[in-house]
Length: 436
Length: 168
Image 1 (tube, helix red, strand yellow):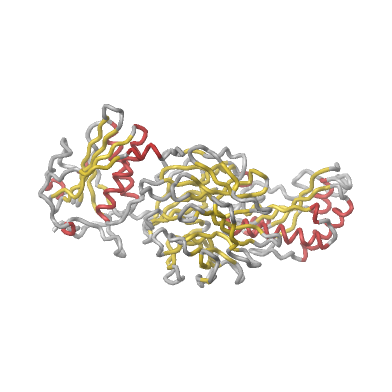
Image 2 (cartoon, chains in turn red, blue):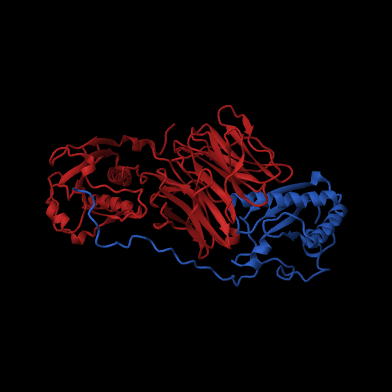
């Protein structure tokens, strides 16, 4: 099973030796406490990587853009830099960086190896402590320079926040073009920053709600290609597709289980209601999880696979429920003033993101898994469908305005909202996991 | 100590929430009525033709928000449909269920399916053979009215009875 992601595994990380004063206790170094309520973005100087001509500046530009969009870092304009870095391995003149208030400094280099690979290395410096915090080098094949930059950004993010980054990730979504009443919809995949878009369907059939498998190599989605809307699996690299299950009616709202062995989805009943089923992808056996004369849909597993959160209107209007992965103990958890749908369990397991409709507006919010602690992160005229970054710190969703939907991300504080650049209209984003 | 010194400035990192640009109702007319279709009312269509069904009987019914109950006005339309379909038995029938955009995608797929099923059940109760009837939900994927206001949404919350097969 070859994957478009496979060649990227050639990336090798190697720690670079410390050049400054040897190990001080880590807590003495600059760090961002992302659990504080109001995080001031950390001023950071990211110098152009040396060598490789335009490539060095490109890499530092990608690292800088990633960190800036996280809302946790404030990259300093290069024109303010005093020291010109000529040797990225040499100890910088910390005074020159402190005076422009750079708390952290990134230097690096990039070069082509004889075997054609790209070698990129970075060093992260704490300017006020006057020492190196981390340094690594990576090898990648030539096509993967953007990915190297994202991996370096993740390393810096992790070193400074103590949390995993999410920049070396992708998003599957629906690319939308054409008039609203004749919209052409295509499956598409891109890097989380909007680069490297690739189309996975031709737009002849309506396609909806793509979601990644845990190993990032497959997606499950819904398509009208057979006439009846059905859930499919798609191998991203080979383009191989298959129908999930052989059910008489519409199947929709698919998601993978955390172990990748099952797809959970809604199946339309003959009476017009919808219930939730899980299908084992190896044995092809299906398990019914709900059996109500209601709409039960949008199931999403907890990261340990033991529970499922879903939407149901069994109580009148749509609300969020949690049940065991075997369908046991179905319990309503949303009780706010409004209609709740599209619940998605956080990859950290601690929160459930949702869409809430109230007072003619659509809100994106989170609540704890018992329904308490509801917080609204974004409010708009028409927006829906949150998906989690793999570190559980950022949500992406889509917002309809000015004629069509576009992708938007917001962090858990609700204060850092960013639009995701796409050429056309875009909807139904699903964030990939990180590769371990 | 290298811990972050207090910042003197707050870099304006927080993105402003984009102002909602709510497009007004498009000037484009919705091809919903016989007049819009260039049909001049009763008499233009051959009895028993698909055009007869669409123009003289009415191929669609509308629903209240988040509801799949067949309203009184819809019952009148469906009763006419049932009578016509029982008279012209050569047609196969697909009932499309649709939702407006004021709901989330997956829920609206289910809601469209429920509306199609309610419409099907009404026709079956009026004697139309269940074997002739299929349903499909388009959720909010196929709006006929493309604007952002209540009048448009109400036109999109619909079930459309489409006929095909033998016959003119």
